[in-house]
Length: 220
Ligand code: BG6
Ligand code: MG
Image (cartoon, rainbow, N blue to C red; front, side, top):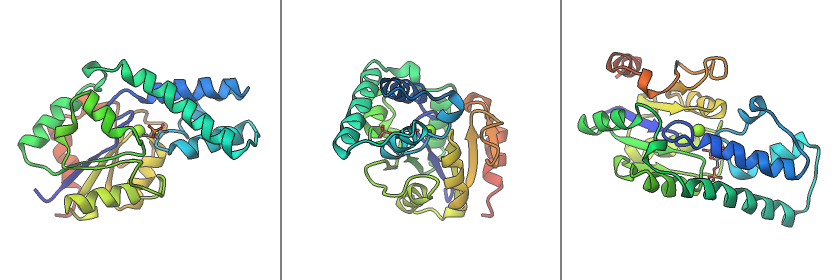
């Protein structure tokens, strides 16, 4: 196959976006900063450091470097507490079925995530073996919407950028895919993910016919 399939992790493959939200919300509240679900969309797909910077800017707070580091640690600790309770049931609807089909049809598959916990989570839900390449928060220096993460994934797969499709639940991630010249598929809310080339509520809505349609928008 000369077409590459790239998945975001949080909010696309597994239902972890809700855990990131909870952990950030608790942390923000401890600083007397309050943010809503709409603001939370701006945290999706964004690295841990960038997320904390945004939250602090919403609250117009400036803190020392040490405090910043300790808050990052605190957030991740709470997040990993949720992850620890995770099992198979947190794989989002339709994802496993699609991965199985893609594997059977020998499509190159990559993960393109901002998370430093990506491998831990894939292992946890037993999906690690489906991925031919993994690019996560440990390997990228430029956060989405910079296309670096997807460019690296495509390079590892050995597939041309315009022959890759990216599945994303975040605004920053859709922008990153578009910036990389890849086909962007939004997973989630139509209103939020307007700039995606295609949008579905979740993977269970993507039929084989839809999937072929998505792949057929590529030139080769
Ligand atoms: C992204 C999430 O996948 O990873 C963000 O959408 C998260 O919410 C980011 O902040 C970094 O993740 P982690 O696990 O390294 O804190
Ligand atoms: Mg995501």
